[in-house]
Length: 154
Length: 106
Image (spheres, each protein chain N blue to C red):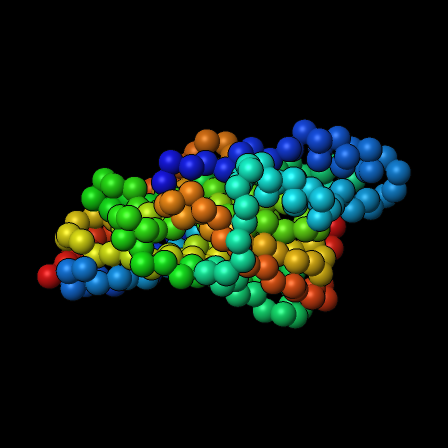
C-alpha cells in the first residue's frame, strides 16, 4: 500500500510539445514510444523480471472512441495477508505519457480487480503490471485498435 | 463542487466482498490539447483517489492524463465492520473533495 508510482517525465514531454507547436498550426503532442514505455516499466520494476500470467487485462479489441475506453484488470490471487496484490500499474505505448494509472490495494480488497475508463491516442498495446506482496511482478498486455483517437478534436 | 456518483451496497454480510463503483464529474484536461489561440490548455486533472474504511486505507489510485474525463473507478473491498467509507479525490490545485457513505455489516 505504501508504493507510489514515480513521477512521470513531464518536463521532457513539455519541451517536446513546445518544440512541436511552433512548427504547425495543429501539432499533435509528442507520443510516448514503446521505448518510453519500456523505460517507465523498468523504472517501476527495477532489476526484477516481469513474468506473464496471473494478470488478466480486459480491453475491447476495437474501440470507436479513444476518449473513453473501458479497462478492467483482474489478478489471480488469494488476497490474504501472506499473498496479495499490492499494486497494479497500467502503461501504454503511444499516448503522450507512458503512464495510465496506478492502483494501490491490499488484502482488505478481497478480490484483486479494478475497472476504470482510459484515453487512447492511437491504436496501440496497453500493458498491466501487478506487484505482489512477495515482490514479484506479473503482467498482461492487450492490443487495441482505435478508430477515433483521443485528443483528435484538438 | 463536482457531482459524484458512488454505488455500494447499504448492507452486507460480515466478510462479504463488495464492489464499490465511483464516478466524479471532472474534465480531466490533459494539458496536451490546444485552445482556440493555439496555446496548450493547462493541465487540470484529478491525480489522486483515496478510499478509507473506518479510517483505514483500503484502496488508492494515482491518475494520469490518460484517464478519461469524469473518472470512473471500480474496486472491491471486504465488508468487515459497520461504519464509514470515505472517498476523496484530489486535483492538480491540491483541492480535495470528500464523500462519506455508511455501510451496515451484519
